[in-house]
Amino acid sequence: MAQVTDIVHQLLQRDERAFELVFRTYYAELCRFANKYLKSESESEELVQDLFCKLWQKLETISIQSSLKSYLYTAVRNAAFNHLKHRLVQQQHELHVRHQADYFETTAHLEVSELSQQIQQAIDRLPDRCKEVFQLSRNEGLKYREIAEHMDISVKTVEAQMGKALSVLREELGPYLPVVIVIWFENLMR
Image (cartoon, rainbow, N blue to C red):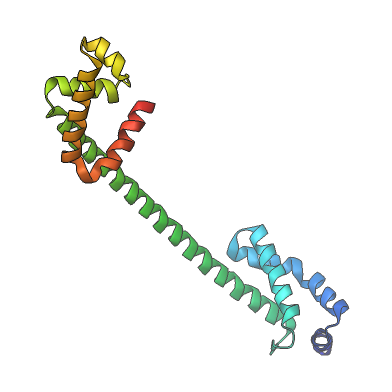
């Protein structure tokens, strides 16, 4: 008992040799003890190292009521429990974030699918020639001159039909127009 008290007293005097002796004496067994809770050697080692750092930093403020060994084991057990609680909170947070991401992805997919249907319905309501010009331009990626040759009409007629199509679609899909443009652009890139 006198030896333990001497070690504690030496620690309180910031005796580095006493601290090193305590570290070498207890480090390995404290790591094994922590590993029983954490089931991870690297986390256990980190926890015990952190404990010794805090011990050295806060020597003046700690109170060792029983033996130094009991104090260290209790500190490791408490730190392990705190670590496990923190790990649980992190896992719950990650699960929540994953759930939120899945929800938003599903919702966005449904909204895009719904919008695609609205776009297609609006296109289907266009007059036949207007619809054909629009689809050749947006779906096939043809230039006005190519559409004119393909349909055997003038470039001016293609421009007029395209203007009419865009005007009707702008009117029907007004608030969604920026998203519609992105969808058309993505379809062209495929």
